[in-house]
Image (tube, rainbow, N blue to C red; front, side):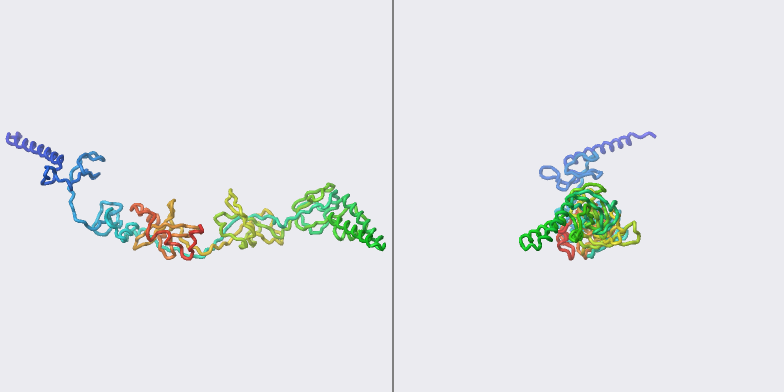
Length: 483
């Protein structure tokens, strides 16, 4: 179909008018007169309420130009000057969702929070709601946050540890030679056996002991012959000589019975019987028959095993409440079904740096001798820590820098609070400061509450009513100073 000349002329005119309109709008944009009906006295448009925004809403500027984010030309927008209004409510997850009144987000169902400008005065109630995690009724049901309270309890803990039977050092004795000489007729030839105190263990030939016996017999004869001389000085001198030789025999190890045997007409003995000065199990033997020994040389080591030590290794975190005199219950894997009891006798002051344990010494009765040195014992120590404010471990969030709990501050409203924890008691931990006995905290879904708080920008350290100084544990005002 052919177009008439009139139609063609009309269409060309429309195109020319459109091009002219585009150039004119660009001129208005460049001069700042777009969207305004008047100018000021200098012919410039009033720009007090005009902003330039990217069509993609990337950014807003006071002057025209290109968007630095996407490169599109920014378009002028007119900002309405409105009267001051109450703060609007918005969703922390979807900031574009706003309302003039409280409610829930249409996108995620989260409770809307009030928006307060930086230059506005903050109502204390609004500030508290902003610094806490507010759950909607639906979120509260889905999260199933269970409020719990810390409990003040008398804590008694059973500490399990491994111990080893050892010989009591105060029951170990040495049998030594009281004179130099040769060992003859060795009767005690092996270790492990039991000897009684006073038992004959060997004979010894000692030249010094033979001479001492000769001297004693001569002194005894002198007293017998000079006792009736009538001279008091001679009598007293002979008696002093006899006493001196007797003491010498005693120092060389002769018993009273052996010396009395010399008094009753006995003759000098070349071999003298050596008896055990202590009874017990022979732990070590240092002599053989025919061996020469010096005065004071050790012959045997014997130990009384009627009472033994059990050295228990206790880890350092369990060590603080141990005390001398505490009862200990023990079981020996070798003697199934038998229970041994004892008391802590000593706690060594040093710590083993490799195992991080303290050696705790327990004395145990062993009259029937069934506990032998080196046996392993399973021990149980009952320790009373006194009254402690305890909270379930799952209610405490460890952030790396601080320990937090979420305290119920309103209906479905949870506020973070820093706490100081003390000793660990299995499923519970000690609260040193930060909480009181009647506070309600979130026992479950703590990670969910902390995630919501971080999305809202709520600081983990709160001020005001949640300061650490205002929440010391009940009944333990000095607990914070003990740790």
